[in-house]
Amino acid sequence: MIVEYIRYRVPDPEEFEAAYRRAVVPLGRASQCLDYELSRCVDEPGCHVLRITWKSVQDHLEGFRNSEHFQEFFAEIKPYVSNIEEMRHYEKVITKTEPTLFEWAGGAEAFERLTETFYGKVANDELIGPLFAHMDPGHPRYVAIWLSEVFGGPTTYSQERGGHAHMVSKHLGKGITEQQRRRWVNLLMDSADEVSLPSDPEFRAAFASYIEWGTRLALYFSKPDATPPGEGPMPRWGWGVAPPYRP
Ligand code: HEM
Image (cartoon, rainbow, N blue to C red; front, side):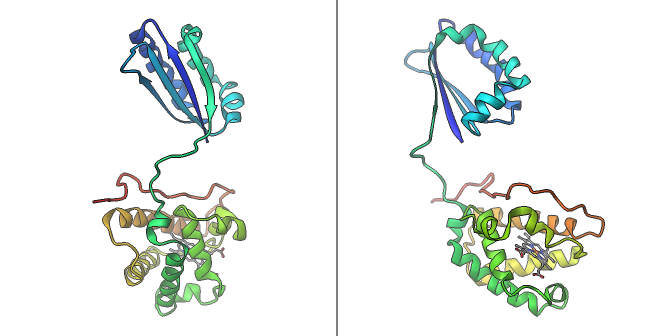
């Protein structure tokens, strides 16, 4: 991720801003652009700073510049090129960031406690126990490192086990029913309470959201006619609409 700053000093701020309102339509469609923000200086209204977050410098200079979105974007802002005072890429050095869900939960050890307790319950469960009768003894740990990575922790699962496609492939042909999926969710939530994962509404809402999504994917891919997925990126879950609550 790289941040581009473009500083303008323009004689006609209103027309300039109107041009940018049109220009951000194709910019927003470009997959290389993660976000953008145009700010007007309050001390000197002709001064503006445009911040664009790109996936990488290469994505900007090669991907975006050679795309059809660039032609449309550039047509709008071309009259202002001579008003540019600075146009450079920057790397973020210090930022105020939220804790990850992984950190908030208590780190790797919290997820290990969670899955140990969970698979203890699973083994004794008449509805889903049989699905796990021959499970790899390392299974609780694999799920712990999977969850840790999804919630913003280290990338151990991807490195050791092989990423998203590998995890999903473990569910192929399992024929999971909706009742089994729901039991999996219920036992996991019981375990979360038992091992005292944080119980604040914001954390639990984000946690439950991933579990709902993940179990529905597992069910989908376990169907007899499911097509194995290609190698996709690891899901990375954040806080969503409710940021961490700090009184
Ligand atoms: C958020 C939901 C889920 C996650 C994160 C998850 C995660 C995982 C992971 C990480 C593995 C092992 C991959 C490896 O060996 O590296 C796995 C395997 C497996 N999962 Fe899931 N899973 C989910 C939902 C479910 C559900 C709903 C069921 C069934 C009710 C299920 C049944 C299984 C089974 C039977 C295996 C193979 C175990 C073995 O024989 O070793 N999973 N899952």
